[in-house]
Length: 289
Ligand code: PAF
Image (tube, rainbow, N blue to C red; front, side):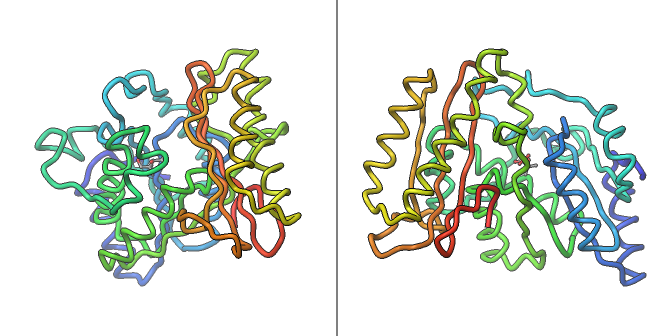
């Protein structure tokens, strides 16, 4: 496992693999790794001969007033967690290395309307920053496959659309959401929860699963499902930003639909929790399709 902070060294390594005809998978992260990230690295190892994990807390994807300064930066612990999985390269550039001309940078990647809806409505500029840095990381590493967690379902769809629209020759894959034993989706931001909030936090997942089960049982009053979940979350102290029953493409479903993506975001104390559950062929898929 090589730690690289330099773009030239990364490009040289990548060219060597290309000459040897080896396939490459990239797992982009912002560090502070947990079992969810590690499962993506395992998936990458099974899918390609060479694996790059990037660790970069991207300032472009944090709106003013968000947690960019507080976001946990734990490179030594991250490297210790990665060591047993032995990815070939951990690319952990400094901000000035990725953005030598300063940031924000002049070039932005905006993936249509979807960048401004749902999470994008509450985190202004977030998806523009995320697609811009992922485009940049894909340019630097030209991977055959890039793997992203399905917990960030909207983000995954945005990256897929970006790759399709820009003819990026990388297959964008989703990795299953990894959950704590009580159902809470793993996230670096869970550490912002107090002990009492942590006990209540799994309710978001419970509400998504219960609404998904009702859809499987034939319920088609989407507004009623959304309102009931929002009320229940409010009672438990969540400030729900959205709880939506949508199609898998995140468009409004029609009554004849039998495939759904249920997506939600809610504030609980200092933490902003997001989660989603999928419905396919009459089955609830809590960790992604
Ligand atoms: O999902 C994340 O951690 C980030 O949005 C990503 C994909 C690493 C881009 O900074």
